Length: 107
Image (cartoon, rainbow, N blue to C red):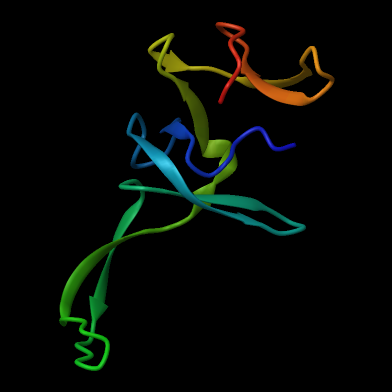
């Protein structure tokens, strides 16, 4: 079981986007690293050519680039801040994620 999943709200802890919050759109896992793409964070400019077949207009667009998973932390809305995530067994014997600050289960 993974501690951070797609759709979780996270806060950036370091880098040029420090302090910004967003939801995870994509997780890229390999043997050497784990990266996440957070919506509206770590934006770069890309020059895009127009493609009338696909309906794309040309110009400069903003794209969210991947960042290392160690640079983000789970945002706990109940505590109004970041929190570490743990894994435990519930009463039915199934693994569930929980926040270590408030000890509440994550949906």
